[in-house]
Amino acid sequence: MALYAELHRHLGGSVVPRVLWRYFQRNQANLAEPFADYEAFEDFYTRPRKTLDEYLELHTLVEKVQTQDTLPYFIYRLIRGAYVFENLAYLELRYTPYLRTPEHLSQTERIDQMAEIVETVGIASQAVEYPIVTSQILCMHSRLPYEVNKAIVDLAAANEYVCGIDVAGGDAHYRARLGEFVELYAYARSRGLNTTGHLYETTEGCYPELLPYLMRIGHGIQIPLLYPELLPQIAREGQCLEVCPTTYLKTGTLESIQQLKVVFDRCLEAGVDIAICTDNAGLHNMRLPFEYENLLTYDIIGFEELQACQDAAFRHAFAWKHKQRPASILEGILHPELNLVG
Image (tube, helix red, strand yellow):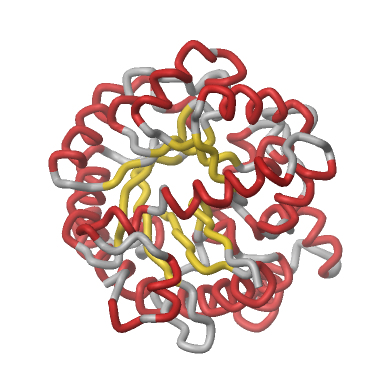
């Protein structure tokens, strides 16, 4: 059985439509009422959007129901599906913990509760019958205040369930606060954190000022498309692009999956690693092996290039870089006593 690594998957966007629909029906029927039946809900949940901002609004639908009490329900089903249907051996889940805390609490109380959310996600991810090595990436957010984002960095640095940080919320929204995010990433690196960030996903989200602080680049497709002169530098720094093919069709960023051929060709020629990821597997109704299959079917890559990308995903996995943990995925699967992820 082939084993795969997934480096870019959002906790909110990982809930497949059938699981979310059943949760609505059993626990919050009012959220199902706007839809005539499951098919109508699935169409709404998975159809393409015109812009990235419109697409990201779907996350709020899931974040509202992913509370500390319900997270184990969703995560168990996520891990089960990833193991049974995707053959995942390694999974990094990313999310903003602040957005899983109760909205009626004060900002200070919500910050304090973030550690409990991380603990809940960490425990729920360790399903004994589905032995996937998991870790968490905590996301700062473009629409959260500086104090909250800094608290997220501090929590990531102090928590054994966490392997790195990210910034999310639509890359076009970083510009007005770019100095803040540069400062926060510099602080994160000073704390020894692994770093990735949603960057160069859209034409409005290209910030070279942040590149020196990132170990991986979330998406990054506009670099080979619009700024290929940056590729030699990225290769020298050993930075990996987390490319999520279906996302760009769902967000209106690309018109055709064939446009990714330039991305893969230029990166591979320049020696820049790419990890193929799903981003939001539930929103897309798309599991990782089907991302692979689509890229092969449309002649964007061949099997040799696919193997290189699959190897890159394991090589750039943050858990192996966290506190000098072992770099072999099979050690984590076959020897859980090594306690790779906390």
